[in-house]
Amino acid sequence: MIEMLIALAILGVLMAVGVPAYKSYQKKALVAQCQADLNDIAMRLEKFKAFNYSYPWDLSALGSIPKDPWGNDYYYLELSNVNDKNGKVKQDLEGNKIKGKKPKARKKKNLKPLNSDYDLFSTGEDGAYVPNVSAAASRDDCLRADDGAFIGLAGDY
Image 1: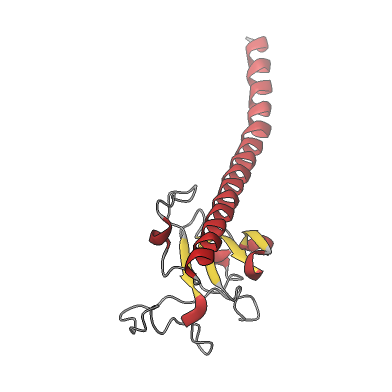
Image 2: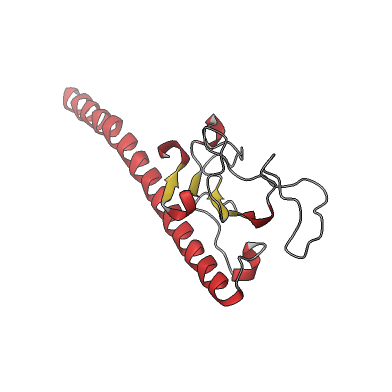
């Protein structure tokens, strides 16, 4: 009986150490997959621009885009039509005004845009979207910033 209790105690200690380490590894793997997806999509966007002289209005022009590792869609916003004053998109590529809820460009802590060409990001594990990447809801977002110089978690930016 005592031997069984000792074995259970050892198993409990191993579980207490192993489970958090596994969860951390699993989270890093999901972030790495998201970064790889963002790199792939960014390369496809650049290829599209090379052949069409502009970025597409939405990701559907690139063909099949996978979901992010958390099961959400990747977000893309072409920034050539963004109004600098409030960060909202004014019109689509054909010059038509956008009706309804207008997407906003992602912003740094100092409220300057993250990118000058396009925004590309995943809303992360929580699925919450806030334009300011320093907000608590954005810390788990996987994003592209500084025109592609940074791809990773908003919390690391």
